[in-house]
Image (tube, rainbow, N blue to C red; front, side, top):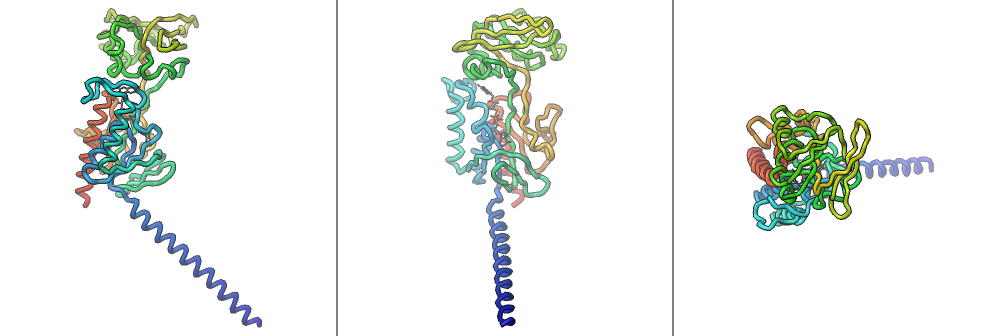
Length: 345
Ligand SMILES: Cc1cc2nc3c(=O)[nH]c(=O)nc-3n(C[C@H](O)[C@H](O)[C@H](O)COP(=O)(O)OP(=O)(O)OC[C@H]3O[C@@H](n4cnc5c(N)ncnc54)[C@H](O)[C@@H]3O)c2cc1C
């Protein structure tokens, strides 16, 4: 009886052991094959103009790209009603519609999309690992097109009138809508001066609101700006509120020295206090410049310090930051990614 019980015990243990062994092995096998299946040729991070153009090109090259859409599917252009400077649309096009069309075009050639956001990467090995909120993706090549987010003021009225109702972050994009009107530019660096000077081509008066009593911009830029009769500096001042009701009709500014508040009538407010490039998740591996934008290899618009990793659009460009230039570098990154993958085969 004792021997029989022991035999049963032994067989039960052996059964459990066998089960666990097979289960574990099976899991390993499944994991192994699923990882094999997951190895992408090219993963594109970002679904703005740069990412979607890269997707159109790489899918037409039969690379079946995977696009990680990120926190803002379609990118920044989805925030504007009217895009008048993207070639091919003589009457302009709604930003959301333009991006929806780009996505359809990419899907048409076989691009796949996932709704996920990159949190970390490992670009240390030949196979690149992209760790996202929901999943981890493996790829031979990666195109990073994460854009640069405009810094905002965080004042009342800013969100309500943003994108089409009088608050803008881009004079090149929206300046011509303010022909014959008075506008305000907020900021004191080179970009703010450039925006103000550009706006003098259309506007009657350009108020330049700056929190200090001198401009931070370079000397030649300061001289050009302050020498322009249409630009009226409002020193030592911050915007307290952007006033409506339906569209922008003015701003209330506060003097930081004596705390007095004044209203200035204007139809548009251009915020030029800088951008934050969305590059931090990649900073362990990819070189950044002093302002946090991706640093590109010498003589290249899209190559980085790591072979097989390409950058495109505003995340690597603090000069132009336009839809068409982003699309342009998206195409370049895609062409070089395809060449890189061909070399590896
Ligand atoms: C209100 C407004 C109006 C504009 N009007 C014009 C105009 O009329 N004409 C013009 O030429 N330009 C205009 N611009 C500028 C233009 O939108 C940008 O230059 C262009 O969108 C840049 O494209 P991009 O693909 O580089 O980046 P973005 O469009 O910024 O796209 C970045 C993408 O990266 C994704 N992303 C970010 N972080 C992560 C992450 N961690 N993981 C995964 N994905 C991530 C985002 O979800 C997004 O899809 C305007 C911008 C704004 C804000």
